[in-house]
Figure (cartoon, rainbow, N blue to C red):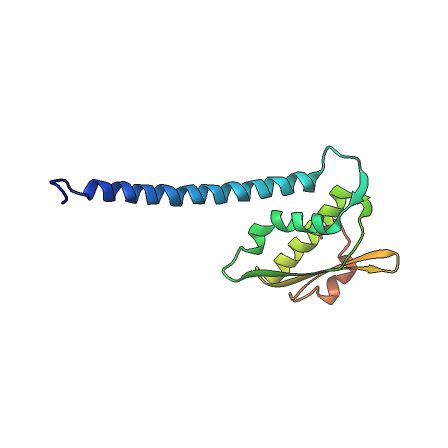
Length: 154
């Protein structure tokens, strides 16, 4: 007590202020995550653009990883994504279809590993071509299923 007044109300106000500051930081973090996801979805879908265009392969892969982030961290262990990106030029491609390829390959790898393991994504220039390799440390495709892997819905 100072001069007949207690500091208890001041302590209460300071606790409330600290709570509000933590809540504010949580909201800012959530907004940044939402912006990142919405931006990735807009770039990923490209619904309003021409079918064939010059594509930054790395940006498409990264957008796909943002969209699939919840699956990559779906277990306590999670999946570690390693990148070995080479210096590659933009390529001409159907953006939506290419993004669907990344989604399918990465999603299949996540499922094969049961939510825990490592995915390695490598890119490189191979002569006049661009080479992209996505591999996981899952069990692999059984030999008796190999002849059917390109069948729709298999």
